[in-house]
Amino acid sequence: MEWLLAPFEVSFVQRALWGGVFVSLICALAGTWVVLRGMAFLGDAMSHGMLPGVALASLLGGNLLLGAALSAGAMALGVTALGRSSRLSRDTAIGLLFAGMLSAGVIIVSRSPSFAVDLTGFLFGDVLAVRERDLGYLAGALALAAVVAAAGHRSFVALAFDPRKAHTLGLRPGMAQGLLLGLVTLAIVASFHVVGTLLVFGLLIAPPAAMVLWARRIPLIMLGAAALGIVATVTGLVVSWHWGTAAGATIAAVAVALFFVSAGAALAARTGGTPVREAGA
Image (cartoon, rainbow, N blue to C red; front, side, top):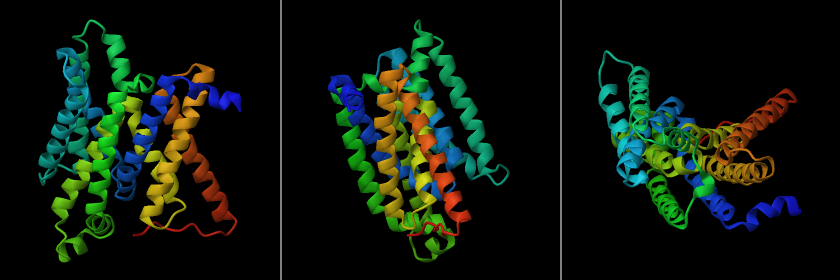
């Protein structure tokens, strides 16, 4: 067991572990709704949309989390505004903002003398550089995400399965959509330092998608997604330590691999006659 425990005797790996655990919990709360509502493209676009704010904050010596939050917020507002146009589909609006924000981010980063190092960190994260202060931010983000998820649960369920019924029940689907978008934004902003703007999508989508194949109730999907995210974090850190691979990318790769394992097992169960349940409230 020494090979498994040895990495976690080092302080910066311990912080990376806690950072990954917090991020896994946050992503489980938000990612479940992303999967159930089919918002994967939006989540991917928003993760890339953070780059201009992060790059500008780095260039000016500001707070990276604040820059990421402002940039992701601008992306969310842009998607909402363009999505109201009857002549543009929602995917078209998201795609345009996706390309525009990513391009702006690369242009801003190119103004930095340490272009290659900065861009690599922004895109792929640096989980081993997580500090005590970052853990405090992540704990606060987790608490806020839990509050939002609990407060909006009923509205989110109605919005995910029958938006028209949500309106009939007076659940204000427009406000629920905005609240859900805020929850996704919070998860992406909180996670980018751990796995980067490109790979945050792996932790946000893969664990909930793996659990949707098995669990029927939404709380169970969230719990299972959190567990899979933590498994991916531990496994990714151990593999990275022994093989010398990029820690954030390894964590994301393990999360995606767990999805394919789950999908394969679900297919085998279905072929064998075992019913796979659909998600519900």
